Image 1: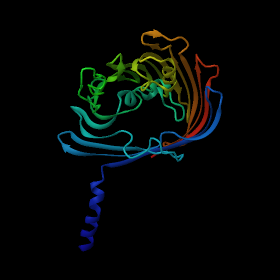
Image 2 (image 1 turned 180 degrees about the vertical axis):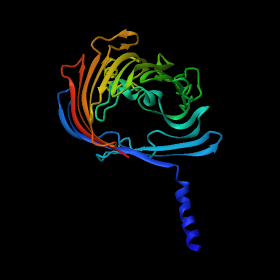
Image 3 (image 1 turned 90 degrees about the vertical axis):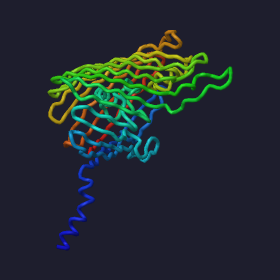
Image 4 (image 1 turned 45 degrees about the vertical axis):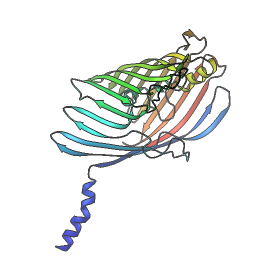
Length: 344
């Protein structure tokens, strides 16, 4: 009897953790790249390796308490951007009838529902930069799926509101730099369509006044029966270069000015044949506007060709080639990479 009691007591901690899931991926590769300056490098790189813990508790009547802690690490030994709970981490409630409410460090709608245009291990599609990440100090509500439709709204607190002082005080940071992110989606029989609006309040200063940034993004396509074809378009207005992709960011710094407008489109196509998935991605960015004036030779085009080979349900190899042509550069930038990913 004593042995039975001892075994039962020892099993209690395991029972308490029965709804905890450990998950993640380890991914890295070797790549050769050449920048717009013509300089070539060979690199060993990490491809967004991560580890996460998540769980839930049944509260009855279809309601669950949910939580997640996800962290970034790098297999190449670099430390920048790594650390505990640096990726999506939250606590909240989930109801089959009422939807999901969470608070924490949360994905933008575009990062959750619209990531099909950026599926590669090595080369990021420049198109996803503005909302392909997460928002700190955030509260997000996701509706239940209703006849294929879904909706989400998220608020991120800037937590930096300051009172205006003095007659000549600059008003830029009088209001907090809060963020609103709204998403609407539809999915039926493999066909998908999504819209995302993001507003960055008091993003920066123009002529002594605080101005808001914003981004509108849409995508639609088909993703079923081994075939994926997804098209997307977005138009953004930014104060400064903080939200632009790396190419536009460099241009904004060079052009000068304070208020910028960008527009981009992308197309992704892939087809799975056995263990092989060849993939093509094309992205175009049009000339930017700085303070309302169109800037010539500020557009770009990005071409990506890749093939994935699935070794198992959790392990994959990927070979990819990416090239970016910039209107204001004599040389193109290109990267060839061979990577491996293992999920757990």
